Length: 343
Image 1 (tube, one colour):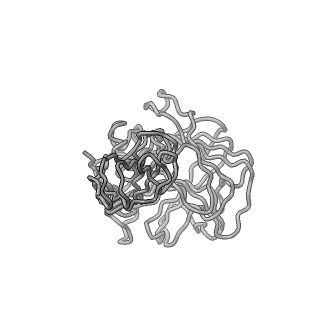
Image 2 (cartoon, one colour):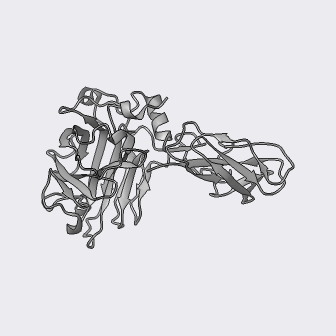
Image 3 (tube, helix red, strand yellow):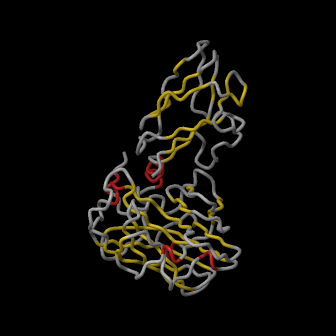
């Protein structure tokens, strides 16, 4: 059972346990999800990459067996045109955010970097009309350091406290003066991602930063890291509230595999609505469902042993299940699926 508003850590998948969509990504002109619940927001391609890395703080350091870290990589320094930005972070659902709205909270994480300096973090509301820019300092290169950032959350009415985006919590990788805050460590009206005094990943050659054990919690002092769900199994259920697939957790959607499917039945009828395919977890909202055939083709199914078939419709997708209808007579339909209810 998922109980969203009882979590100590509001960052779901802060240990980077789950990477359902893949483990290596290039930031382009649009937004994308990387590790589960961690999304890139971008309007410019500067060659920055995101990937899973085996490096991590030790148990003696973190007091937690972290499985891996998120790597931010930039090989070539870039000068972005006005208005371009790249961030990576989490869109925290309003049901979670409401527990710290207007209260004191602590944002903490572990970081290792090839460059020293002061780097930006941006907290914002869903409409990007309220922003709080702060920073953390990398003191030594290639050394795991824990960063603890206290923040008093905004208490204005401009916040979503329900199933929409409650809070953006982002590491800013690239920004220009368009989105520079006039001052740090205070709430401002507008969308701000950095400050003129801070360093950005996009400005360095051969830049690598590793992030691990990300946590946001209510209170004035940080505690040792813990998963939002309290256990690995519960954390998996939490990430699947927003995104799930029929494939194994470590198999990318669209991979050429057999029997990682959502449906199989025998009938000779046309326009036959199959029994519902139940989701593993009730979704945040009715999700967008995408089907794959066994050859890995998107928006295709396998009918009567043949892939690349489009003779189907998705009749219904609810928070609990979805229903597929075959539009030709078939004795068998097979497919893999993804169900996306992300923020």
